[in-house]
Image 1 (cartoon, one colour):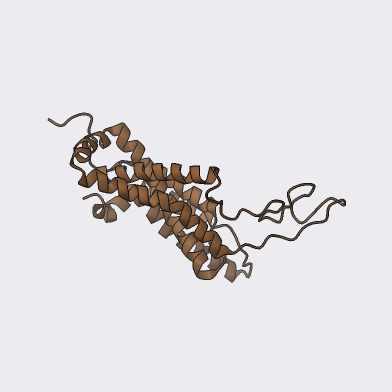
Image 2: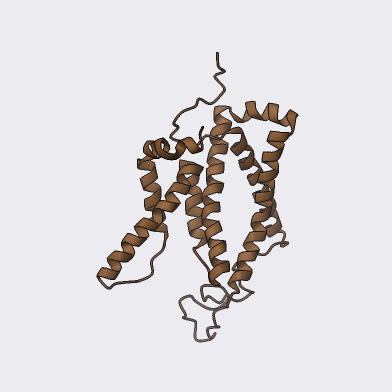
Length: 238
């Protein structure tokens, strides 16, 4: 008779981690704490952090205002120009402890016998598997957008996607899980293309945030949850 403490298999509406993904989620969380500590202590610099007195949105700290308007007593200073590829490299350095700790945790959970025996049982308790499943979905959601942001910035020399999209997909991944958040990310461009076609037809082309299209992709995968798992879930949940 199976233990009631173990997670049942099958379709789950909310994320649930396998022993491997649970270990990676825990390792990534430890790496995130390390990166955050390095930023707080000043060892690492935040990306797109302008020097004192200036900000990326053309705001000058002190006796000034946003949107290019400043009090009469203090003229507006020019917007600070960033080296976008350098800022992307700073973000890569921030992410390195997260990736390294995640890989190290996966290795320890599968190659260290004492850890493997204990971890397989502990990580599959419903509360632990659910928590780490959501955590892993968060990291995957953040990672897929952050990866596009970094590689796009390095390739084109300007900021590609925003950190707001990273946070959006991270939150979505915590709810729908790592597989579905990746599917949502690849569904989103179809909504973007449809909108671009509509704008071209009516000659009203303008830039809009990518977040709404990501949100529509998330909505679709939540509605078609079981159908998506029937079609491609077997690749990940065999």
